Length: 458
Image (cartoon, rainbow, N blue to C red; front, side):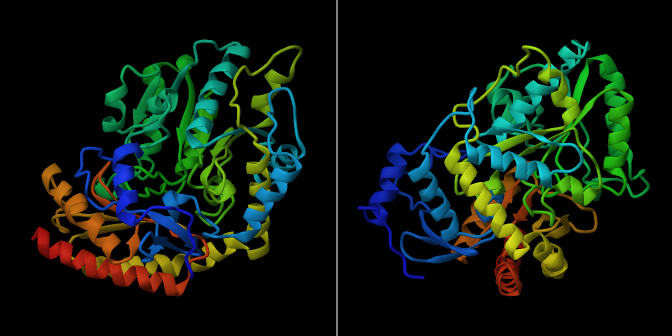
């Protein structure tokens, strides 16, 4: 690829300016101000390029969201055409064609009667909207005490204060306490850490127990990802979501499927709930909706949940300036065209086994403990001892992940996620156009770097 960029500074100057002025998200800001900083300047297909022209396989799809691949000219054209026609108008008491058309298209793809689409600027806003909606819904339907939300341990649902109350990661919560009250947490579905004789639906039944403990008349909703991101791509057990649906129905509790990551083909379907055969009351989505070419998210609610707000002079008194932005909506419509034309969901289903098999082949490396996930959303859990499943302590994990793996994977041309918000994991979620060539490249880098890491930690 021939790289043409518009920056007027050298790589060193850009790095120094970033250290001085750019407050990066979820980043340690106390690092050496003269240390080189990864600066990505271009992207094409499954690859991105840094300011020095080096190519990297984007094995994370830029944080689980560039699902159709980088550099799609049709998305740029859709944005440019929309700016010429209508650059912006709000959806506060007004509408414009692109938001209407996109809402209809999403409703046709969403499962069941999820026909009401509320647009946001991203995932945290979508979750925040859902949490406010379930409180308001119960208030309007005579259950005003239903305000609590049950989520899973180590689950990530966003960074706004309401979404953070559902997030089950202590290190992300404690800086901002006290949080919005009502967040309750139950065990997740990481069966790799379970006793062998545990009931496979134990984690689902824990939700029923927590509802009973809190009092069914106080619990508004359960929020779950189809495959949990935090902790490393934790899939559900067979029948898990069917049991959860039964539990919610029995207790007048709404089920929110948080699909900010798991929608738009990541699991081989437009929505992850379709893969696991359950019907949520609300879906939250973002990221891959626009291929991340524009900031956009959405809360998709069922007709039943929307109905109380459609009476008389009632209103859901909530919104965002840029929700349903016409340029973002135009890009999303063009992105869905790509999905349909190239059958990206079908491609993921066809190639999932090959991608997963490549990761399974790494199990001979001593620190590779578990391989799990679904679709193009997979993780490797790293352990000190494969027999006992002993994990690394905090100091060892710091040395393994940040002291070696993150930098070494990047130096070898692979961008993926080395994380320890549960036990140490490496996560992979390449663009959905990835194929055998990319799988082989990922395998080569992982084998090289994980073998070196295993010898280092020994």
